[in-house]
Amino acid sequence: MNFTYFLLFLCIVGSTLIITHWAARRKQTTRLFFIADSSLSGFQNGMAIAGDYISAASFLGITGAIALGGYDGFLYSIGFLVSYLLVLLVIAEPVRHLGKYSLADVICARFPGHRIRLAVACVTFTISIFYMIPQLVATGLLVRLLLGIDYSVSVLVIGSLMTVYVVFGGMVATSWVQIVKTVLLMSGIFLLSLILLSRFDWQIPLLLQQVKEGTPLGDRFFAPGHLFSTPLEALSLHLTLFLGTAGLPHILIRFFTVKNALAVRKSVITASWIIGLFYVMTLALGLGTVALVGWWKLVRTDPTGNLAAPLLAEELGGDFLMAFIAAIAFATIVAVVTGLVISATTSLSHDVYNQVLRKGNASEKEQLRIAKWTAGVVGLISILFSLGLENINVAFLVSLTFVIGASANLPVILFTLYWRRFNETGVLIGMASGFLASLVSVVTGPHIMHPEHGWIAMEPLFPLLNPGVIAVPVGFAGAFLGTVLSRRPVDEERFFRVLVRAQTGMAPGNPTGRRQS
Amino acid sequence: MDPEKPETNESLSRLQSELLRQLIRRKKRLLIPMILLFAVFSFGLPLFVSLYPRQMSRPAPWIQVPWGWLYAFAQIFLTWLWGWMYWNSAKTFDRLAEEIRQRGKI
Image (cartoon, rainbow over all chains, first blue to last red; front, side):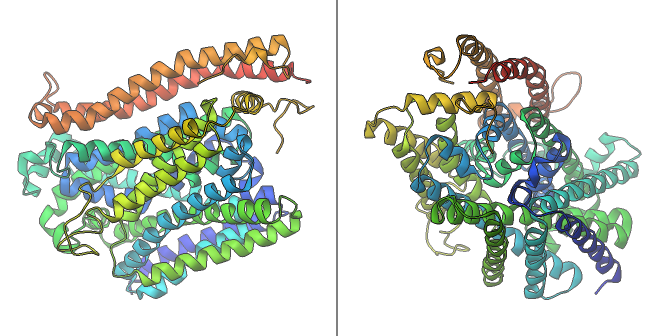
């Protein structure tokens, strides 16, 4: 085992545990546990959102995708970034005004009832677990590769860490782990980009010239058409990414951690700047990998391209820089999985236990106890799944979560906020149809069905790798048709109350004129 | 957005209803064109690079950067620009929302 790697990994683990200890010393309340008592500033929350959002798939995957596919790899990052505009303009502030701890709170502000809450909680839990498993598997593989530690031990250690952060530190620890990760990640890749450019005397044309020599694509590296087989595939991916973020519960619950609409706005804009700058630097790293490491060496080391950033770091700064970048990748994954654990925990303990089973009557102490136990169970479930999936390619689960977010959650959120006629049947049918369409199209698609490397060795029944172009319209159509065909009377009064509260933060009928929480 | 005559509701005063209507009207006037323009511009990227890969690979005059790359970078800058525009306009929304709340001992 390399001592430098071990030391840097230990630094990350140590600093995050100190954060957790600091968070755990505060007087514990449910508000503190679930939403950090809405005490974060907009800037802090923006950094935490970026930390929550930039996953291993973004840092390691996009750098590799650019190194292997050139221009088309960069298109991925554009989709991830532009999605924040939709979040900013139509989703973030109303969600903050309507919700308390979870996405289900937002929907139930208009449609109170156990069935709706359970449906939203189920989708939230599924998205969180589906997103968490590939992250944990990736960390296990990364740590094994870099430290030589056995996969099972790696997953156990990381799974335990994320559980400890949430159980003892709740949302406060989660947020600060994510903020620290963002600072580390951004400074690390900024440093790497500077060293890279200095190698080429700060002349980008020299770098680009070297890129052409480092890839078998030559001049074509800078042209589109290497990753997407058809226009429909490219469009479908963009649609999924564009709409998916606005339906990801672990991102949406971050808006409850700030105190008002202004701070929500500041959060999203800060996050979009950080994420945009991150992707610009990722582009530089992808190009640098091709120029200095070379396509052939990259593919020989790891055919998926995921080791592009660490290999470039090694080329630029030797063993220490590579260890530093690997430690940042580790911090990246830890921060993302911690955010997912708290999202899954909120949906189970707040929505299912307190609101459905205990009908909202659980005491403060009981809620906290259940939340902590739930976090432990969520951690355990994820660890067990990840241990069993070591040799299986589960990367497709990341895209599946975006499709579910875009097709099951987003139509329901949008219609809840803005469509007067929308009703409970529409919610349930919209969620079910979007969820099933996502699942079926992925299961019958090339990720799972493939004659050579699929779980099911046969030609795919559904041709697209990214099924958003089908699943998203199905989700919207389900919500629309469910509403129209059920012909329930419109509850004007409730819609009006939700509208006022969503747009102003004021609850009509509440004597203080303020949102109750 | 579908406010559907908020002024008819009795839980708000007439002045509050008027302010709410104003808030929603202003939001609609800003957000609908912003979202539509951005969506068209954004979805144009995958469509153009898939349907016209050769044209998008050609360098733009003067700066010698391919159109495809310019288009992709423009998405990043447009995201930031739209965010900044919304940030500025939202100050008016905040003022109106605050006024509605202040008048709201309802």
